[in-house]
Length: 230
Image (cartoon, rainbow, N blue to C red; front, side, top):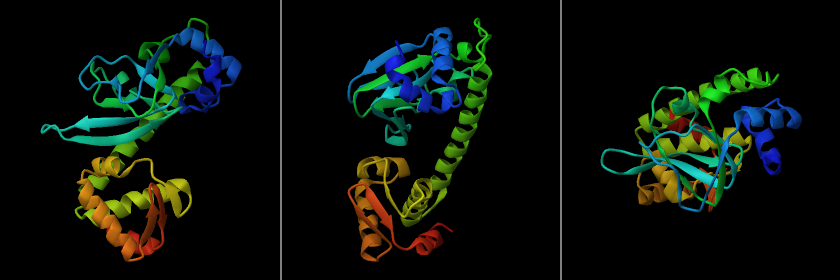
């Protein structure tokens, strides 16, 4: 039943190094649940019971978190092949720590954590690799969360923007790249207001530091942006 999603699953970090034949055998052991969501529907709701490690098969979603005042912040986008819920799945905590909202119609599978780390009844050769992949993913997510904290500790709005754009440029490997967020979502991610973000980015463009159109951004003064972060 997962044959149609073979490309997405083999591209997923959780199944890295596992060929399609081994993957199909493993999925028989893992027996994941498949769920469908419409645009703007919640995949998870903060505080509700966790249903395991999720893998996005189709569509796009965003991970969001509300503070005590009810203001929403965006933690990260999710695309086909991305996973979520791995941090809470092995923590002993019962509820989802964040709300995930579909930005497009989504197909998702949920893997029970005890089947990921438990004894494999079929003695699948790739099960150990699956566990190794999971440990690697959890470690990288912890580092990304640390990076998010760094954005929030930068005092100036321009410094936050510069740090984020430099990070995206490094990830893309080029000075011209596409942002994963629209302007409103980026403001939520950086924990600033949208008008303030738009004004500051407009000033940076006028000063020749960056250029942008929609979600496409070009850094034209790399060293100047680095100086804003320090």
